[in-house]
Image 1 (tube, rainbow, N blue to C red):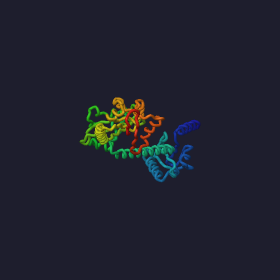
Image 2 (image 1 turned 180 degrees about the vertical axis):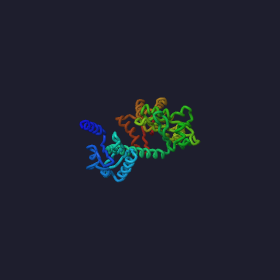
Image 3 (image 1 turned 90 degrees about the vertical axis):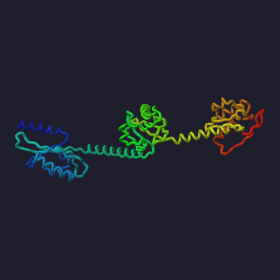
Image 4 (image 1 turned 45 degrees about the horizontal axis):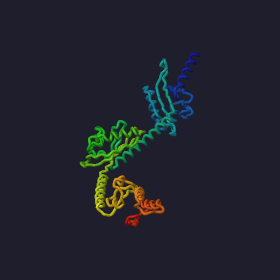
Length: 358
């Protein structure tokens, strides 16, 4: 008896070390189960299979009954993920068939583990993943709708995604572009620009700063000017690329330059003294009549002095009227850059020279 008791104690110790609870059911209706088996399932006793089924939702209860039937008849083991009757708990139930050493007794053994926390964590992770996938889907839809080429690169500067406009520019499918790694700069006019986008992407990722470059190329059979941008996404080890068609901007700039040249040529022919300042008060144009009237050197004016500097120069050369407060007089002229809303005429009486209308 002492030997049997010792073996029984050793067996119970072994079974209790399992990270779960167990219940053994014999063919004649006898059951034996671990101390916390009923507590895990939330039942008072486990004298029969029906007691265990009562802890489960109807569908899982029926599934357990069918699996136990196959286990008892054919010795087919099973694993079932089951929900409690109230749906608040989740269990992992494993069934196996065994016999004693003399094969005179057979029994079915159920292992039960409460995996509620694991299921909740898994569901939460799945929900986060689905949310992320939905957000990525929305971002891709938005990027696909942009009327300009957009693309993504990995840390090796390989294209991993392109939008519909990118495909339209190259007249290729996204699969063909990604498979052959066809760059948006494939149509660049200069050979040195054909890998410009990849080079920009590497610089952007290395410096963690956006990189830009302008280049001309042939797209849709037309010569266009593109401004390429590669934006680093360091956390993803990725870069986001965009191409802007700035051909119209270039055309407008060229038209403005032609207009300015023709205007400057016209003003150069006038006998009236003219000087033009930009929004920063710097000299951007003057004609010959201006240098002759005020006695200023063209080389000095070519350096783009500001209005205040011009007035100081004229004062040094005694080409401005004497002022009791020259600083206030000078400031009144500088204020015209922000206060003047209509043309203004002033008559200046210059020292030792004839009157001058400004």
